[in-house]
Amino acid sequence: REAATLLLAAGSGAPARPVRSPLGPFDYEVLLLQRSPQSGFLPRAHVFPGGLLEAADFSADWLGLLPALPRCGLGSVRPSSPGGNRAPVFATDRASLGSPLPGDVAFRICAIRETFEEAGILLLVSGPGPASDPGPARLLPQHHLPPALELAEWRRRVQQDPACFLQLCRYLRCVPNIWALHEWGNWLTPVPRTGRGDRRYDTAFYLCCLEERPPHASQDDQEVTGFQWSTPPEAIELFKSQEIWFAPPQFYELCRLCNFSSLRDLHRFGSDRALEGCERWMAVILAASDGYIHLLPGDELYPKDPDYTGEKKLFLSTDKKVEELMKEGSKLHRVVIHNLNNLTVHVNIQPKYKHVNPLKMDSNIVGSNADCNSKL
Image 1: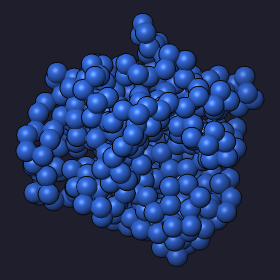
Image 2: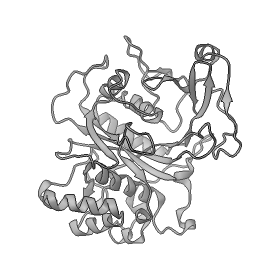
Image 3: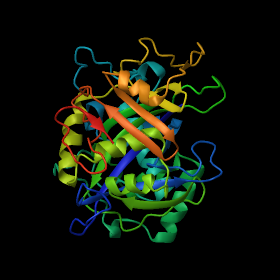
């Protein structure tokens, strides 16, 4: 199923502070939500806000609120470069499927709606169209919002019926700030080793940078049972110390964010790079004798014709140990999984679409991304 998620980075509102990391201070934090233990997908995991695409996100009624411009004023993604492969979730012609709303718009509406449902944060603007200020986005002034109890009731209604999100925007005379969301990536859940039955999601990842942290955020106590703001290095340290847990895509993306200690640098990179688009990544799982390797596109062991649907029931396994496989490899793009809280990302290929690899670092040395070699 199609879904959207949001890497929401916000200025900390205070001087950059030291962290439990050799990377030094960061001046922003990222919103992390803890999924319910009863969740059918990634229970107890810390994730970015997001969720399933709904029919209401594609509603033609949004065209009455959003500007009557091509792609509702969103910048056009440049044509795929030679050897590139734009993700189907972004490239699909939604008009041919009966949607009057471009997919790029609907996926952003979904991410914004889900952020409100799960964390109580409203990413809206009072005027249709992109902001004139090219910097990180600003939240609606508090006086523009209804009282807390009334807003909580709207949140409950949107959780029960996604179509109520459009009603809320009409009521507030605002629109979802789709222009603050920048295309970042696309992850497709791996084919499970059972070959059937498990939930799988084709998820669009967006980046949104806010000038300052929202004054009010709260879990919904349904899908989400806790939340926290952490710098990317702090989040990685909490993961390593087994205080929180991430699935490989979230771990990988936090490692990428570790390249940027400045919110404005991250925003500038994200907004400029987004016009290049991105490709779809589906990890192919290789079972070694002492662990698992999630192979990603570009790795020398990644299949030329990946089994996207699971119909082929082709699963990779070897009697070799992970260490042997790593010594043999020369073209790497993989996540090595020793156990739930022991992941390492290995990349020595040039990223496509002007993206950035996870930061190169080990326990004592911090390096640059310039040589395309990355290990965290």
